[in-house]
Length: 170
Image 1: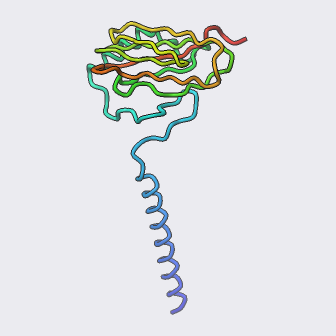
Image 2: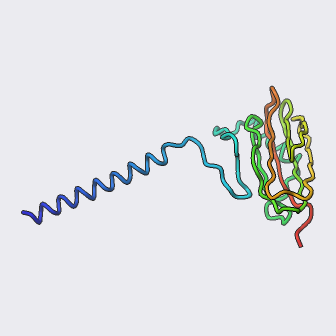
Image 3: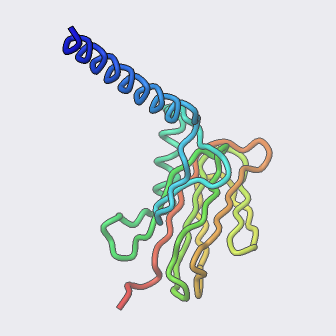
């Protein structure tokens, strides 16, 4: 009888341990409502979580117009560093990892209504959301480039941005 009792106790302990592990995993993953910022060069948002709803048909069209205005360099091009497409309401708030001392270009376009405030290396520029592009040279780049693009009052639409090297590395 003790042999059978030990099997029952062992099975009960295994079930209890498995349940505890599953519950712990659920608690750990269920306690967050946003993604943690990524640390890679093609990373992400620093200050606020982006909208989680799918883009509307209007936003898709605005996104296409903004991307076309930026003249996207393909990701497999040696000059490409990183790019993104964001809702105006979310803005772009990030630190891009660059090679210190190298020269880059940041291209930004906004398609929609209103205007954006673009702050790069402590210099602010206003960008109307009419679909035109803004090209900002980044000469002798820092190791990390803070990029802060925020909507001005009443602005809406989509923002496309891209960082490229000015010339291929040797």
